[in-house]
Image (cartoon, rainbow, N blue to C red; front, side):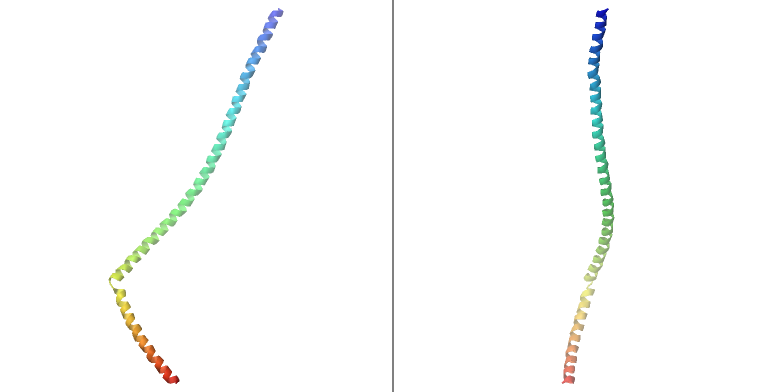
Amino acid sequence: MFGLLLLVNLVTTSTTTLVTPAEGSKEGERDEEEEEWGERDEEEEEWGERDEEEEEWGERDEEWGKRDEEWGKRDEEWGERDEEWGERDEEEEWGERDEEWGERDEEWGERDEEWGERDEEEEG
């Protein structure tokens, strides 16, 4: 009977010692899993921050796109004006006007000289 009790005691102690490391390894695995989940949470947080940054960049891109559209419209208007002015130059309207104004300037210069001489005569 004593031998049977001793045998039961040995079997119980050996199984608990055998089971204990297995349970410890399960706890170790759980710790590793929790650590991995913690790392995943950190990564997800980083990705969330990146998403926010990308959203901000998207908003900036939209603003810049609107500005580009406005500037494109201005460029078109200015291009049309340049074409009109080029056509006017080709038609020599401006050249004729410049000639007329040059002649007027000469006439006015002569008048100024005459009036200057008159003023000197009157003062003198």
